[in-house]
Length: 95
Length: 423
Image 1 (cartoon, each protein chain N blue to C red):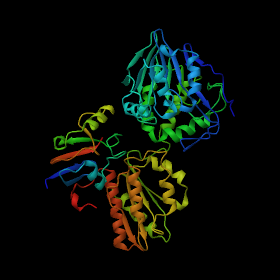
Image 2 (cartoon, rainbow over the protein chains, first blue to last red):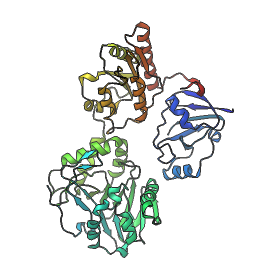
Image 3 (cartoon, one colour):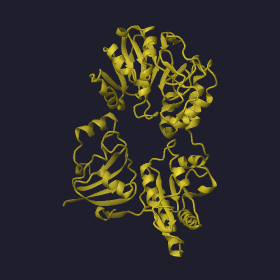
Image 4 (cartoon, helix red, strand yellow):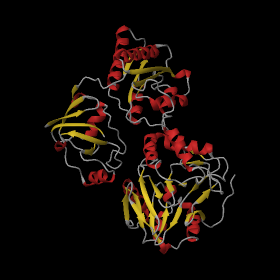
């Protein structure tokens, strides 16, 4: 299975993950500072800054796009509960 | 107790501006968590301009009749051009679906974050969402000689909240901020009974977890010329309104003076039956202290009450909880503290758990789960030690303290992990 590497800047941890993993699944396991609310892409609590490697995440769904817009999220931010890792290297930190 | 009702008429609060809210003097608890010793009010307002009438917020659904009666005494439904929603919680939006039916031509102004809430509120009515316009700071609506200017003030105490400023008159409609659960038909702060306790109680239970947002809002509000503050609950603040803004700034400012502001703070709470968890706590604290740059405090929960630890927890950057395991659970004083934190913001703080156990040792994992549930980050596995910690186990406790201190001070060593190795 293809692998990817996600680095959580706030806790200094890089994790090798299988492609298809959502950021939420791995950030919770390593105790990164990204916090969660609804876990369904609605509340925007898990807004995450993608420091680099945004192209290695699947594009946001229509719902995620709308929630990011409604919550005035800056460019380069994603919802960790929605963002799916597709490969390569990604660096993130809490928004 | 305040009189059950004033008249059915609207009450003028400034020329062409009326209170059209409702009184709820018999309410004794609000949203389960708040006591309301003399009830509350749901304040709604009408502003008349030369070519438009605005309604600002509505009331709880079962008080809609009072609201509409008062509204009708100062405006016809066909005159309403504007509905402003400063906050969509049901006690302020309960009469909204019916108002939208009666004034379908009105445009709704709300914050960006309120849009999905509006759709969710209107779901049961089956009504098409009205024309709504998301607004933010400095967006305006011209009512003809009167201008409503919006202030983006989120999380006071929901994501959707905003304030609305009537520029020409210096009136500020604030939603829940500066409000309180206090019911008095005399309406104005210089005529009602003593509501100071209610004002502070409301802040402590509703606004305190959002104090950073309160300070952001105050920064937007302080430069305004304010003649009157019209909140969505409790007295209308027409006498010395700026005093209430000052008071909010005081309330939202950290309560405890911190001599070591430049340092991170770690508070270690423990409770111990035979002294084993205490020894772990002491070793952990010593380890954290040895790193430098972290102010470490050690507290035995048996010597305090959970309420008085709340201020410390609010101010701390990191929290470690130590508990023995008794009957497969952490002990009650730990849960008392961890169930008392809804009035402060602990999101994103560093958390850890540790404890000695005799048999099965579930407490540490249970505490970690609770810390994660409270949205603390728990990047370091907790430490469970069977019965009496020996020298090497106390060294592990020191290491845990050192690691916590490194996390707090940003001196963590980079780690590479394979997800398959994580539990």
